[in-house]
Amino acid sequence: MSLKSKGINAEREIIHMFWQTQEWTACRVAGSGSIKYPAPDIIAANIHRKLAIECKTSKNKYQYLDKKEIHELLEYSKKTNTEPWIAIKFKKTEWKFIQVQNLKKTEKHYVTTKAALKEKGICFEDLLKINSVCETFK
Image (cartoon, rainbow, N blue to C red; front, side, top):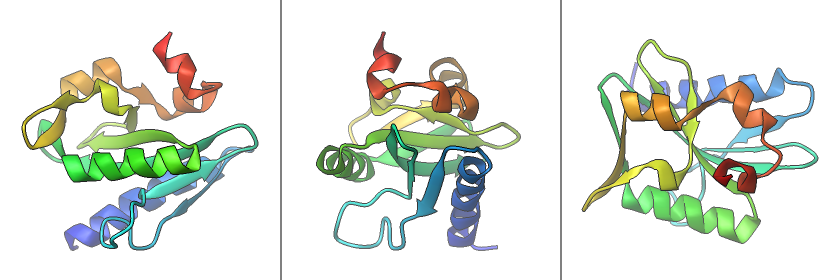
C-alpha cells in the first residue's frame, strides 16, 4: 500500500469516527497538501463548532510536520473561523488531537513525540466535549 493510500485511509478513519456520533459531520478535502491554496485534510463540524484537521500517522517515536503545513492550516482556520487541530496516530495507539501551540517548534519543522502527545494531546471523545477552542487554554 502506498503512503498516499495509507494517509487517505487514516483520514477516512477519522471521518467515520465523526459520523458515528450523533451530532458531527466530516469530509476529506480533495487536494489538501497538493494544491496551491491552504486546505486541511479534514473539515468537521456540528451546529456549534467547526474544525480544520491535519492528519498524520507514524511508525516512529517522532512526528514531524512541515512549517508550511502548519502555516497553511492556521491560515485556513483564520479565514474560515475554524479550530485548527492536528490528529496524530502513532503505531498501536489511538488517535490523539493536539493544537499547534503544543507542538515543539524547530528550525524547519514542528514536532511531537509519542510521549509528548500522550501528555499534551487529547483523545477523540475529549475533543468532542470541548465547547470552544478557548476552553482548551484554561
